[in-house]
Image 1 (cartoon, rainbow, N blue to C red):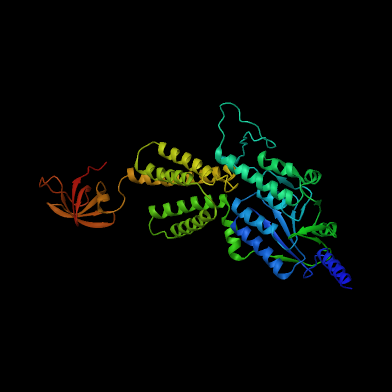
Image 2 (cartoon, rainbow, N blue to C red):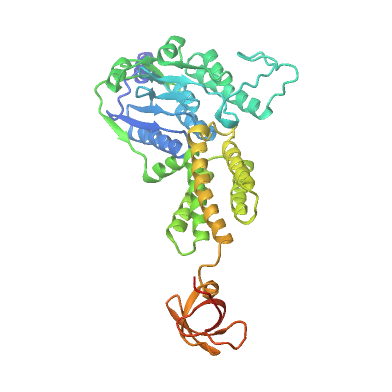
Length: 454
């Protein structure tokens, strides 16, 4: 009798492990569009925690990302691999991609799906200028070969590549996906379409929309937290999990393109305010942009060398106003800002996010240079021109004698009456109505000289 009870209990436990993952009778949906950064990572971790707390049947992550920070990606992967709720990653809509960090997240899902017209891969660390480069080492790994004679190997890039390849290999083995391909995605920056990804065993399904996806994976058995679970999701209501306001703000700022634009806009605003004290608005806007840029630099890993080059370029802009360099300092400043901007977020072992050189950095620096050039031209012209304010600018003006200068009298100059005397001290007199030129001004008294009428 006791043996029968044990057999019954064992059967019930086995059935419990294969029970449909209905949980609370709903599916949570998290949407990530843009880079993988601390804000989007916090959002996805909150979504996983909420799904576990609510007992959701599954968490559906709709993904469209160009990549992101390595640290944020690791946090997401750790949470996904240890989640007690099935996680489905769906690369959507058409035209979306799961590049770099997005590849890791897709491969780590219990179910990986893509919409038609999407792509995945290119998980190689990013090199300076936003490009990618192989840094092979003689390890015998797929896609690697000894470097050509005389060619040095970038140790930092190689280290980042090896670490990411090992992590990707481990995840692919855990989720029973194509290990060889995912390692190539890291080492050789391979990217494929959704049909090729399905053929290679990188993803599980191609679906036109969410409903088709849930229907296609109905009854699929997945391994969650060491236990097998049967998915029963078709027809369940979906609950969208939204980012908090702070997460949305930080997610917006955690874009290198936004960060560099804010920094340049802040520099223009403060520079304008310093040259025209009292305008208030440019200074206030510049200060706000600088504060937001500082927050962005706290989120994104940056290179101090790149930041110093940008600051040096700005300093040369200012120096051009006071040094007659015939534009040499100005041109050098532009070059330094371009160089620093391309380097400032070049951290291949920490992030694969960089500033878009041609589409963002070059137009932004060109606009900054045009605005700065106009200011430099205006200030320079004012510095070499004559004085246009104060009593000293009266020198050289022509007025009319309103009472005879014998030897002193009054003259009318620029709408004002002045006490005046002859500048040569000759003692001659100048009759009323004669034209005189101002020679000097001392307080409320001026000296004049006769001007022959033409």
